[in-house]
Image 1 (spheres, rainbow over the protein chains, first blue to last red):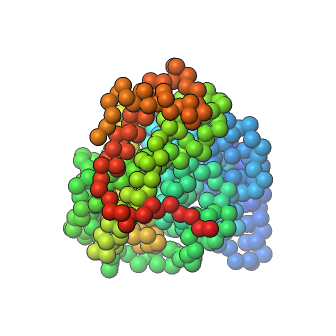
Image 2: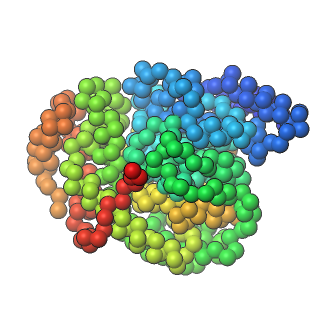
Image 3: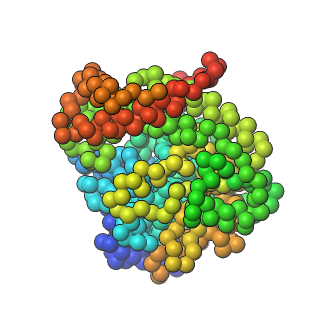
Amino acid sequence: MSAAAAAEAALARIAARNPALNCFTAVTAERARAEAAAVDRRRAAGAALGPLAGVPFAVKNLYDVAGLVTLAGSKIEAEKPPAAADAFVVRRLCDAGAVLVGALNMDEYAYGFTTENTHYGPVHNPHDPARVAGGSSGGSGAAVGGGLVPLALGSDTNGSIRVPAALCGTFGLKPTYGRLSRGGVRLFAASLDHVGPLAADVATLAAAYDAMQGRDPADPAQADRPVEPALPGLEAGAAGLRIAVAGGYFAGSGAAAAAVARAAEALGASRTVEWPEPERARAAAFVITAAEGADLHLADLRTRPGDFDPMTRDRFLAGAVIPAAWVVRAQRFRRWYRDRVAALFREVDIVLAPATPGPAPAIGDAEGRAVLGIYTQPLSFIGLPVVVAPLRRAGELPLGVQIVAAPWCEAAALRVARALERDGVANAEPAFAG
Amino acid sequence: MTAGPDRIEAYVEAAAPLAGLVLDPACRPGIVANFARIAAFAALVTEFDLPDEAEPAPVFAP
């Protein structure tokens, strides 16, 4: 299929399905057509094309897209001028031949797990429109899980790629903290913010991850790492990797536990490991997030609190009065905890854990909303790379399994996800066929 | 140890002006509830005995 045909098909799917899902906040049809035509011209000229040539993608609306206002899910940012240039990773994907078709809905300023955005409306889960898509990258989850695009970008501070990937039945990757540039991305809590892809298959996920690597001086938190592509070893399978299941806090129950058990069985993982202090790690991440998020928006909280989404406003205001000692102690705990987890990863290469306690809660379900991040937050707290693999049985809602690796070992987690996909255990079949 | 609800509310009331915030009375219960949740999480962290060698881990490269 030509890139132009792929772009037109994606635009047609967006036109048909977005009214029900509410995942797009902008559609960049003109740009998509131009980028697709450029890919087709290169193909016709016999030029080399990357693995993402002609792949339509969309980005959470906290990524800068040249000519679009970077909303970050807010009403306040809508007053700002359009972005002058693309975010670093958006540019990298387009350089690799991917075709941008639009920007996606999210929780205001990324502070939430459900994308029940008051300003722009809630995103609906493509597998059941009465349920949330997860968040804060809910538009990204619904756009991929609903089959509108095969690839989307999200961001993850405490679970905001992994939760929507799991609830919408897509693959998702939160790389190691510092791996990918956040240049041109509206931050939330700088100590914990990551960018990463969601995709309908592991090869596309890995190709996007590979394309986005590279040094960007605009992100002071980016680590000085070489490019370490995952695609070349993607088909190596799980053999040779020491895979364990996280017990205790992460044991989960019901369908979430059953999903992890299915993945573990398929991978021959019989060992269980005790994760050190996960509940405290979640608590420390919660405190740092609230303090850093509030500080970032303090000027607006002082002068125009009424313009914030009621879903986030009170949390931001509460975060603005956190005693400094709590935040410093949380950062010190983070260091201690990192060392304990590093010791665990000397014994194993991969740890499996549920992504969420259960399937997507109903829109408006405050209790379900409050616990969505319990399994993701202790892992992003120290920046571990995690791939979410979607597991879904016929007639059931999707659930995700977190494939957790040691820092900088994204490739190993992606290999395991690919093994589960190849064996038919993981399944990211979109909710709508065609 | 977590402070009681009265103390949480009194703290939020006292600290908000120091942070330059004017709290809408209609929002106060929500803000206090959110702060109580943060305080409960913070208690889990501050009650934990850390060695002095545990230095903070923010990323900053001069």
